Image 1 (cartoon, rainbow, N blue to C red):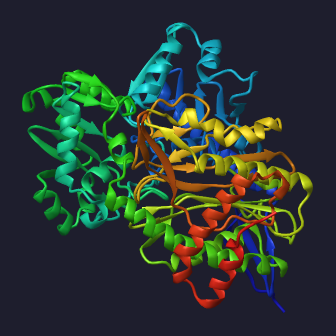
Image 2: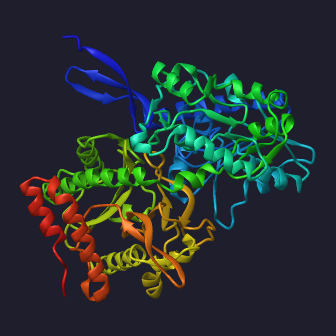
Length: 636
């Protein structure tokens, strides 16, 4: 009897292969080495094609960053050139290709992954931020000759970054060549196009301020710098200004575009097929003209003829945009005023955050009530609990997706600060140890970001001690009162002092801003050790997320989102405090109560009382009973 044999193309552990099916049995064909070699061969072909382009442009090296023209945290597929040329799929890294050599710089999160994915490609791994690792410019300076040219794509490198590279290369006698032609267009077959999803209006009842009013405020701000026009290139600034949102970038409700605001008129540069009739009518009402995304370059070439006065551009705008502006207009480089404007939320935005946090809190209570019993069955993993939390959030009104990729780290995985579970790293959860869950959601009225570390069962004394030190720091920051004129750096010590006394520290920042149905990471204010001069003001939203990470053992972080509000005014001036926005119980089982002061226990109990009061009416009887137990006062 003849056997029926079929072949199916599949992906196995990121490598393409064929599934051989014989009757009822399936076999993975080809050795893993052969699969890797096929990938290596493709990368080598891409490198060869790039080097031909480099020779055509008389370049000795080319730098490929992980950025796009808008300096966003997440990059649309169209601009994922570094991933395409190197085969390294991590989110952070810079590839540098010379005519005979190549290197890739990435941080410690990706050392193991990069070594595996770069093996055999001819691209060397440079472990960034280690003392023995040369910087990109140091390496290029050591292998290139005086007069050699290093190329960059001016559209995906910021003016600030390009200026730094140029100055550093100059010390070696090497020149920087800024290209305005995308070198990858000539070699990247089937390159993804720009997203074409429609833009939509965020109603003024949610934003609290009209597009016209925001534009007027921006014009007033730039006039103080002597400018009469400004180009906005940061996508969240454009979305905020116009009260529009989109779906072009992973986790961020923004759309690819530029916005020119001037006395003579305002222009949105965007793929016009993304503009619906409703949005077109809305923009016309607010006197915003619509032009194609690529038309900005030509308009800048005629700027002096059609506009009068000085053009303001951000140092974070891309280098090609800066060069065009400087060539054809009287230009000043100044930070955009929009960053600070959108950081201070108005009353409508604050109310929206509170509503979004209630719905998010409901989803989290449902999840936490389910979690420990589910783990006890032995059927849950890091990825499965991530999926469950997504399902519960998606049931909430106005849910528009996640605000960042969830970090679900169990035991030693949680010690990797930015760990993200994959099918290859996913591990089962057991009724013991700690699970760190850092997640967030996008709702039409607000963006959420919360971390809870959960005891799935018995803990070691070390785990309890570290958990409590983190909680003490979290509570000390959350309950701080501080005078007007305070910046985040001045408060950072409050989150660290308890763990510093124990000889422990963490290297990431303690707090960041959050956008209103926008990017989950927003500036310009931050709470961190290194100096951040932006002053904290009422209306700003900031996270409170200290942590402890011990390699091979555990990671712990507790995070709430806070709103800065007035506290009191005395003869010594105005004082502010934090209002917790996040509504979710903090796991009491992991607390070493003897390490807590009476004041800290009071703070924790007051927070849990707030959570109970706000969420209780929104839950069913079983959920209410669980929440009551989870928020009952903790006493000695």
